[in-house]
Structure formats: structure tokens, C-alpha cells
Image 1 (tube, rainbow, N blue to C red):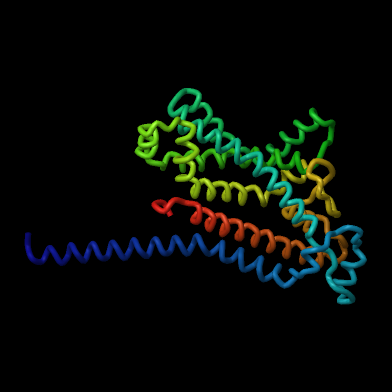
Image 2: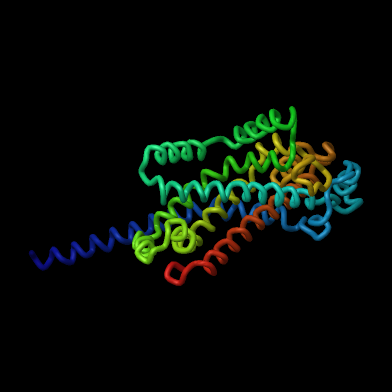
Length: 309
């Protein structure tokens, strides 16, 4: 090997390394630019209109006269999103209560019991198919199901929660299954060697070890469905007042509220106040999703065993 060949080889490696670094940084910037632009646009248009009055009032008995006055500068911007926040919390919370047990138990069955059986293969295939189902199809399924069970045209928070759970369950199953697979088999075998039964090994060893990742997966599933609009329009309807009963009556969620303000302004001749409320509601929705993700990560770090933090 000549002495001149070594520097050229090193130079080639350095140039290749720098080129790869530039490409990776450029790809990262290209991926982050739309996200930063989205956050900046929503914050710039929505944050100025968020106030205590906006957060703790609803749209009940509000007419277009107030929007015309606000558009002409003769009055403040009335109306708020309290009823939409209540609807979002109730519907998403109930959907989570339905989805997490079903998805987690399915993942436990696939990893700990079924393994590579034909039934497990069929379940995984169906889960993959459900992951790609359009959200409106899930809404129509829940609407048709409750039209048969409770009567035609039934709309409530429960129907909406069932529609969202159809979208959540596949995500919970897939993420939980991957987290459970990451638990070393040595931990299971050590528990079996000490005489622990399978169910106790799963409850006391496997689940605590994977709980941090499972929590993150559940949060991703919640973030995925909390912004759905189409299935909630079909299943929960559009309400302007506050409804705390998830089993009866129409409820409005934040995405439906945003859609309704943009597509059906309170004062068609003066749509800007409705647009302002829509931007403000979108900003609040993004903040809720960010808080959920931060809380889930913090919770996951607190409950995770020392070795997997």
C-alpha cells in the first residue's frame, strides 16, 4: 500500500461522512419545517383570542348579531369552547377506557400465549387491516351498530367513543405487542424458575418492565383520535350547549367545533369572528395534545424500572 493512497482514502471517508451528515441534517430540516410552520401559524392566529372567557363559556344562545358587532368593532368576541372541551374529554376518555383493556389484553395474548400460532397470525392480519380503516368508516360502523341496538339515528358520546375505539385498538395492540416483545425472556424464565405462575409473571414482571413503552403507545393512540372530525360528526352530532351525559344527547368535540365554525359561520356576512374562534380552538387542541404527550413521557419515566429508564 502506497503512502499516498492512505490520505486519499481518509479524505474520501471524511467527504462521505460530511456529505451524509449534510443530507441527514437537510432531511431533518425538511421534516421539521412544516411542523414548525404549522405550530407558528396556529399560535399566531389562535393564541391572541384565547382568554378565560373563551375557555369557560359555550356557544349556547349565541347569535350572529354578536359576531357582526365584534366584526365591526362594537363589541368583544363572545362564545367559547367549554362545551367542546367537555365533549372531547368525555368522548376520548371513554374511548380510552374501552380501547386500552382490549388492546393490551390482545397484545398479551399474542406475545405470551399465542406466539406464532395460526390464530395469532390471523389476529395480526386483522389488526393491520383495521389500522388502515378510514375514520369515517369507523363512524358509520358505530352509527349503524347503535341504530340497530338503540334505535335509528342514535347519537351520543358513547357512540362516538365506540367509533374512536375502533381506531384506537389497532394502535394499542401493535405498540403494546412491540413493547412486550422487548422484555427479555430471561426475566420470564427467572420467574418461572422461582415457581411463579404465568399470569403472575406477566402481571409482576412483564407488564411493569414494558409499562413505559405501553404508556407512550397509548398516548400516541389518544393523540391519533383526539383530532378526528368525521366520525364524531356522524356519531355525536353538533351541540352548542354543555352536556355532561356521555350516554344521552349530542356532544361537540374540539375538532367538530373547529369544523363547524369554519364551514358554518355564526354570521355568514361576518365570518371573521367564527374563524378567530376556530383558530383559538385549534391552538387549545394542540396544547392539549402536547400536554398529554409530556405527561405520558413523565409518567413513563417515573414508573419504569431503573434499568429501562
